[in-house]
Length: 191
Image (cartoon, rainbow, N blue to C red; front, side, top):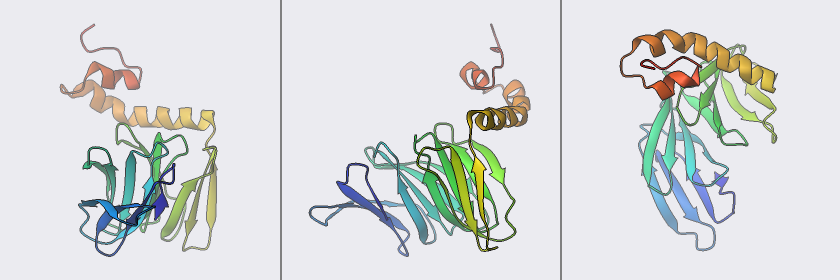
């Protein structure tokens, strides 16, 4: 479960495979989102209160729009259960923890996977940012908790690595827009 930032609603997810939004004052169900094919392991409300994340043992992380009452996208399609998914404090990133021992970092706007951390030797049970977003932590069944500093230099390194990986796609796919190319500082296709 998770509270909305203003405390007016609670979001839950569970064995019935549904994400539910509840009114705190009345206890009434306000909304229901379905789309998972297995139980939901965790939910998280975006810092602005308009989006919900749901992690499921079906191997997906889904992003839901509360106002439009619809699925925005599935951020992960993993063969192993996803144990947790959380927004960063600024709401721009998502971190997910998987039963395959990995922690993944996602861009909220594009849905792109920015980084996969695989230093655990067993299932990762949870991952989260510290309150100011400067550290990322994960806890694993291997008995360890990992802490990664997320300084601006680290973000620049992550973006550079992601762009190294994306550049061949961005330069060869005819459906890529100039705005997409600009993310990695690539020149427009037709200047």
